[in-house]
Length: 403
Ligand code: PMP
Image (tube, rainbow, N blue to C red):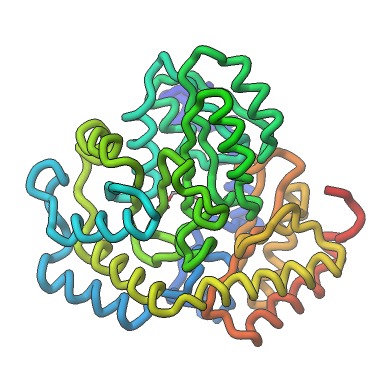
């Protein structure tokens, strides 16, 4: 356990900081890299143009003229900040408009906006749960879910990724304890969808409630981008759905949607909402505009998925292990940190920006390069991504290891 004194001291044996220092010295440090230009499928880093294959701008709406104009107009009307929390002076008429709009879009009675997806999950979960409750989480849920459970002081149980038999076994262990089953709609590291129909039926059979963090599903999957619950046609079976605007909706902020009663409870108990500044007018207006574009151009999520399907097919044919991916989030398993770093650097040298993910971000042995797609990628850019992976096969040695 690191103490504050250690942190202010020599940092002698923090393995993560040490690894960062080593890789920086080798010119191989892949994190916190500053981009000089970034708004779409192409970015500029150290003066070099790169194809962005590591962004959650799934619909390519960041920088879309309507989204940009809405944000600019909001800044002109309201300035940069709400200068207060929603509870006090920070609520704008457009916050209520977006809450109403997104509740309708997701098929829920009411919705509540937060400053970020992280704040949303931490706030919603810590408002809802207490020490007498158990959060039963998929092994691959996002870190902010776990932080919310910890903040709630609730019990935490995990079940094997997307394994409803294991979920049932865990729920049985906690029989008699009020349980909230928490899953991601689309998993941010594996790119598969939660098997919601099975999960819902196991939860119901065991008297548990269901919470879906659809950060990567909102705008991307389901009819018209209405998310993972809509994809499985089970919206009424999900008690709470959260989504962030920082990915497909190309803005900032997030939402929790559910029954009017539960949302009103959160409005008065979610500490990350009550004690933090309201979502900026520019992000709120940009999200409203992004929803307008999505509703008028329903082929955008289809285009994103088509790119992912093509790349998945080609990479799997080359022998790469892309796990259970079925969405625009595509992992390419590299299985150890040195291979991940070498693959990331080789792809960068070939003009492709990707996300290297190592332990503790994923379990040891499950290291990967994560790529993701945008509706606005051109076929030529997709060709370039595929060609780069063909080129680096000797580094990753696809086909030599089983998933
Ligand atoms: N949930 C999931 C599944 C995520 O992947 C992320 C972002 N990586 C978040 C929540 C947090 O969203 P935000 O970046 O808007 O805080």
